Length: 274
Image (cartoon, rainbow, N blue to C red; front, top):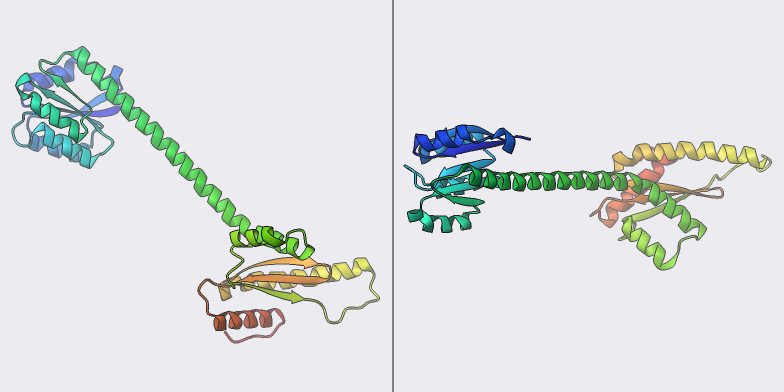
C-alpha cells in the first residue's frame, strides 16, 4: 500500500527539497499535495485526506498546530510530523497534546525525515492490520450470530423432543428453556392425536399414515407463523404430535389466547377470524 503525503511550508525551497530529494517510493509513500500557507493546507487536508502531514509550525494563516488538530479531526488515524526552529520549541511541546507523531528541528536532514516517515508508515500499517483483524472478527461474529439464529428452531424442536422423552429435566431443562426463550408465559403447547385410526393397519402402514398426516399439519403450521407473528417447534412422541408455540413478546394474556385458538382452529381446517 502507498501512503499519501501532504507537505506544507511557506518556503518553496524547503518544499522542493523535501519533495524532490526524498526517495518516497522506497518509503511506500507518495506526495499528493503541497501548500505554502495554513489556509491552503487546510483545504488540501479536507480534499485529499492524506495519511501523513508534514508541516512547519509557523505558517501564514492557521499554524501547523492548527493543521495538526484539523488533520486529526478529519482523519483520526492519520499521522502528523511537525517541523520547527529552536526558537519555536515551546510549540513543539504543545504538539504532543494534539497527538502529533513527531517533530523535527530545522534544518531538515533527509535521513532523519526518512526515519520518522518510516515510523509513521509502521504505525499506519499496524493500525490498518488491527482494523482488518477487527473487521474479520466482526464478520465472524455476525456469521456466528446468523448461524445461531438459524439453528434456534431446530434447537427448540430438539429440546421439546428431549423434554417429552425425559432426556432433559429439572434445572437443565429450565436453563435450556431460558436460553431458547421458551419461558415467561410465551410458550404454549398443542397436542394432536388422531381420534379415529384403523387399528387393523399394520405398524408400518400406520406409521406411514401418521407421518403423512403430521407432515401436512406441520407444513400448515409453518405457513401460519408469519400470519400470527409466532415461532414454533414440533416434536413427535409415539402417535402424538406436539407443537410448541412461542408467542410474541409483550402480548397480553387475552391476545395470546386468541392467537392459540385461531392457530389451532386453522390446523383443524376451521377458518378462525383474526
